[in-house]
Structures are given as structure tokens and as C-alpha cells.
Image 1 (cartoon, rainbow, N blue to C red):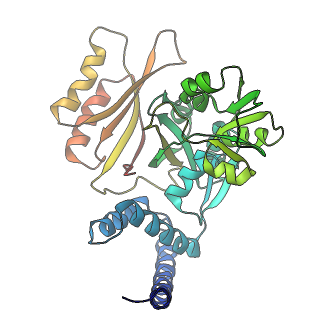
Image 2: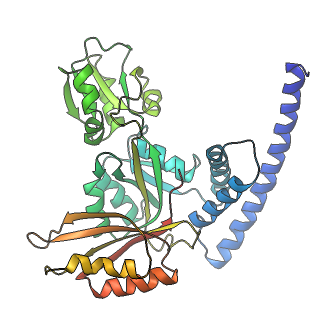
Length: 360
């Protein structure tokens, strides 16, 4: 059996080989960037990167698929930064789940632009202050993020990707890992709702205070030892807080889905990957059977629907917009035929995005 010293020497040698190959890849990526400048192609191609990761995951490896995805995403992020650093807006401050979702999608070499609200993320992206935005779109236990849905309807951006993130809420506090003396707990409204039962059992007398984000709640908790916050482990590191309790969400499999948005001129509809999704919003005339008729083209052409949500329309009383997610790509023959028929039945019709589906 080899000694620890011998094994470490071999690992060091392999690391040097990996670095040499990464430098070779970086040089090729730079050459690709030069070609893209000549033909005007976008620097970031989520469909291409999704295909690369899927190919690597399909190859034989001792590494887990999620580990391969994380490694290659960072490699591509670092290489992409040699061409251009994408500025990405997200709900801040740093330490939010939105930042975590942005890093999950773009890698840590992105240019971070923390924003104070979801509205500001949309404004920054729509105005060109950022190339891309990352916004929460729905939670597995609390449902859709209403403000995001309303802004997707009204904005000039479209969805080009999405991230499904495991949400693990922690109770954080400054200078103590005890629950003694906590008088108030800060958190985003969604986080407070997702931890309602735990808070009722363990901190029934603590006031629940709403923050614009969980990271902002963590910042507030740093100001007073009697305050605590519901936030991620990233926020604990960012604000120097102690973890009082881990994973306090009421549902063990709590997930939040985030949409990656941009203006169409920054990135058009990504090409097909074989694992794609379409989001659209429609409304129908207020008449008997209208909603049923809306779904018939999907069934006729065998197009699967993964989400159907209604939101009150602001145009008139008791009228609704319907948000629909479909499996497939706009270039699929069956999808194209189904949507062409569906559109004739709609009083309003807008494709919110067509993008590689989340795999995490």
C-alpha cells in the first residue's frame, strides 16, 4: 500500500496535468470567442452548456452527476469570463438563495449585481444594466411568486433558463448558538411561511418580522443579539452569524425554482437540447367551456403540461391570466402545431420563454 506522502505526490502531479488541460481549454475558449465576435454570436449559450454537462454526466466516472455538473459549470464559467463577464442581477444582498441560484447557473465567474427587490432585478435586466437576471418563480410548498409572474407578463424580457434549488433554511444569530433571549425572527415572507410550524413550536413568543430577502434579514440579525434570521449557510458566512438550528423548513424536500431572464437581443431563444420547457401566459374569453377548449390542442398533439396557474388580470374584474409550462421546444412539430391552434382560442397570448429545463 502506498503511503499518504506518495499518494499526495501523485495527486499533486495529476493536479498539474489538470491545470495544463484547463489552460488548453481556456485557449480554445478564447479562440471560440474571437470567432463569435466576427459572426455576432452570443457569448453565453445555455443550450450548449447544458449539452456539454449532459455529455460529461453520461460518460463513465467515479464522480456523482451533480459533482460533474458543478465542476464543468465552473470550468465553463471561468473560460467564458475570458471572452466577457456576464453581469447578472439577482435579489440581494449577497448571501440570498437568488445569488446561490445565479452561481448555480452561471458559475462564480459571473459579474454579480445584487438588487433590493424583484422589481429592481427586472428593471436592471430590461434596461441593459445587467445582461441577465435571476428571479424566484415558484416554491414547492408555497406556490408561485406572484410579483415575478406579474412582471414576466409586463416586461420586455424572456426566460432563457431555470434553476431548481434545494432550500435549506437555518436559524442564524449573532454571537450565540442558543435560542435563549430571541425576541424577533427576520425572514422573507416565503421563508417565514415555510418555517411556520417550526417557529410556532420552538419560538412561539418571538415576533416574526418581514425582510425584503433572507440575506437582508441576516443583516438585521447582526445588529442586535436579540434578533435572529432565517437564511442560508451562505448568508451565515457572509454576515458572520452563528447557526442556531439547521434545516428548520417544515417540508424536508423544499425547493424553489428560479427563472433566468434577459432581453431577446442579448440572447434569443436557446436551441433544442432534448430536455426543454416552454412558459407562456394566455387569457380566454369569459364563456362556457373556454378553459376546456384551451387544453384540447395540447391533448390532441400529445404535448405535456407541467404547470397551470391562474392570476387575476388587471384589465377587468373577475378575469384571469393563465400561466402554463409545457414540455418541449418551440421548434418541435407537435408543440408548434398545438400552440398554433391554442393561439386562435386566446384573447391574449404571450410566450414567456423557451429554455433548457432544470436538471438539479
